[in-house]
Image 1 (tube, rainbow, N blue to C red):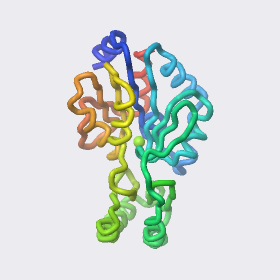
Image 2 (cartoon, helix red, strand yellow; image 1 turned 30 degrees about the vertical axis):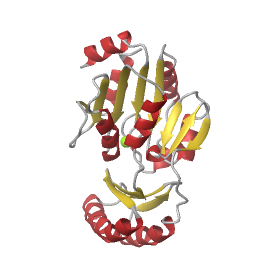
Image 3 (cartoon, helix red, strand yellow; image 1 turned 180 degrees about the horizontal axis):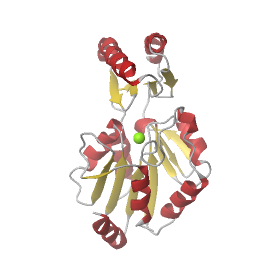
Length: 247
Ligand SMILES: [Mg+2]
C-alpha cells in the first residue's frame, strides 16, 4: 500500500490529506488537554501542507477552541466538532445551525453517571457533549457507559440527537453532524484527484463511508475494530511513518 500511495500521490494534481487528531496524530492522554502536539509534529504537518498542490486538513471531534489552540497560527485548515465547524485561512465558521438548547437536558444525566463512575467526566463543546471514561476502571467504565446509552436513548430519539459509542467516550450531538458531512463539505469546495483519510475511532467511519466508492481515495483505519476503510495501520507511529513517505 505504501508504494502505491506514494506513487499516486506524486502523480496527482490536487491532493487532500484528511487527518484525525487523537489516536491518529497523537496518542491518547489521561486528560484530553494534555494531548499537545510536539514542535516536531507541528513542523512535520507544516511540511506536508506546504507540498505542492496539497491541502492538509485536521478533522477532529475536538472542541474548536481546543484544536485551535493546539494548531495555533499554522496555516493548516481544520474541521472540528465532528464537522460542525471549520477553520479556513485562520477563520472559524459554523457549518451547521444549532443553538444547543438540548444540552441542558442532557448534562444532568451525564453528571449523574459521572458520580457513579469514578474517573469519568463530562466535556461540553459548542455542538456536542462527551462523557469520557478513559480514566475509569475499564470494566466499570464499559458497563456504566452501556447503562448511560440506554438511559439517553429515549431522550435522544425525541430530541433528534445522535449518540455515538466511541473509544472510551459516549458522545451526544444533533443528528446530521458527523465527519462524513465535514468531508462532503470539503469535497464540494474543490476537486481532488488524490485523497488520503486516516482515523482511529467510530466517528471516522462516517468519513470513510463518504470516501468508500471514490477510486482516488485511500482510507486508513488506525488500530483494531470493524471499519469501512480500505487499509489499516497499527498506531500513531505507523501513521507518521506513512506520511513521511509523501515528503
Ligand atoms: Mg481519533
